[in-house]
Amino acid sequence: MYYNEEGKDITKQILNNRTILIEGDDLETRNLANQKAREMKTSSYEVFTKNDKGRLNFFGYGIPK
Image (cartoon, rainbow, N blue to C red; front, side, top):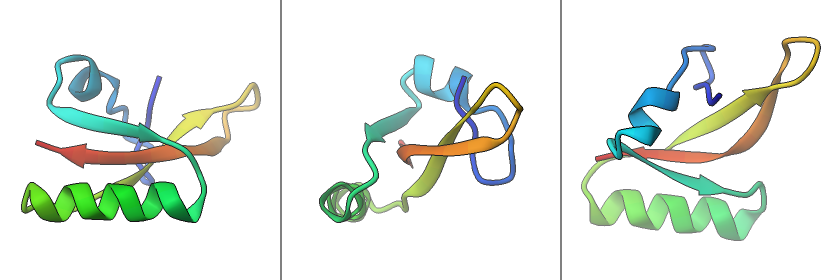
């Protein structure tokens, strides 16, 4: 399952192809997500998963379509 930074579940948007998921945590990935978002005239945001203790772990970037 995937979450935004507020902890809202965004898995359904990703599976329904309403949000693009770009996996990675390096600078190159962040720049790619920002570039793709600019091309689509939207913005990118951080995407997280939850670990065994329920804490959010950074996963990548989401771009709404």
